[in-house]
Amino acid sequence: MEQAVIKLAIQKKGRLSEKTIELLKNCGIKFISNSSSLKTKAFNFPMEILFLRDDDIPGYVADGVADFGILGMNEIDEKNKDVDVIRKLGFSKCRLSIAVPNAFDYTGINSLEGKKIATSYPTILKKHLEQEGVSAEIHEIGGSVEIAPTIGLTDAICDLVSTGGTLLSNGLKEVEVIYKSESALIGNKNLSQEKKDLLHKWLLRIEAVYKARNNKYILMNVPQHAIKTVTALLPGMKSPTIMPLKEEGWSSVHSVINEDDFWDIIEKVKDAGAEGILVCPIEQMIL
Ligand code: AMP
Image (cartoon, rainbow, N blue to C red; front, side, top):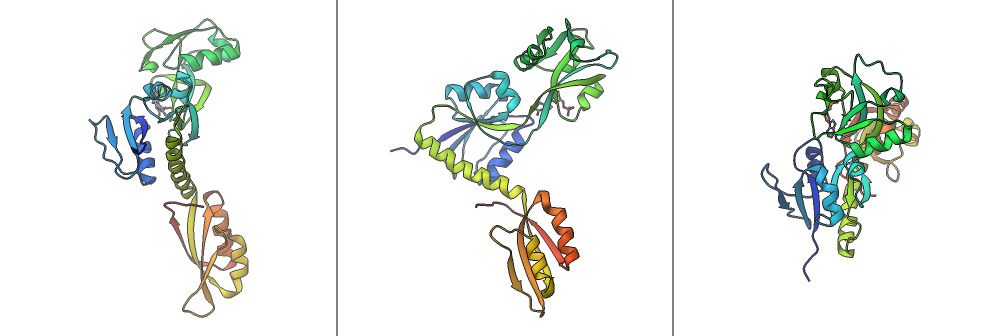
């Protein structure tokens, strides 16, 4: 029987594509992509990668043209297709915000009553306005939304904001954050068992990459009298490794620590007498 191959749709060009390709490569999935290819096959994992426009991806995954897709939650919720959100991926974070010209006397969401708002995200905006009980006219436009008030098309805009630089340079102020977005892995709802098994294998790698990113491997030299205090501070995957140094009375202690506790632990082990502390990145972490 022919081996199943999963089809993954990713963004061809744009804010998500670089980080998506990096994630696949960190998962050990090797493939060649160039700017003109629309489709490629991984050499060492049963995966075909389709390079598409991100706003087309929810539809392709819902229809089963692709089994999986990686794209922003903003596109997933805007297109509102019947797909499974398998895992949020944490990159390409941004917010969908309402912004008005600097001179607009904005006192709250009710200031938008009866106004015109330009956006490429009419579904999410409409839902938000309905929730707030505000009635405004939504103008759907495909791009360059921030220009709409300047050319007299609308009174306000609703667009993605990352650094806020685009709003600033177009004389706009952000007045409402209506939605927070990040990248996510989505899947078709009717996957065969073989494809589910392949997803499971791939997810194991994704988890290993994310776990590794949040953890560091640390090594330090510790005098004998401080071993007990230092090791009590270090969790490790099971417990810290202790290896005697050639110089009597000293050991090398190795452990894995979480990024969140990192500085706190480093300060404490240093105070306890640890020296020569080395911190190394971890490529994969499989528990
Ligand atoms: P910024 O100037 O960094 O706030 O970025 C705003 C511009 O980039 C707007 O034109 C947005 O439509 C676009 N943008 C910001 N973040 C994203 C994102 N995560 N995905 C797609 N477009 C984005």
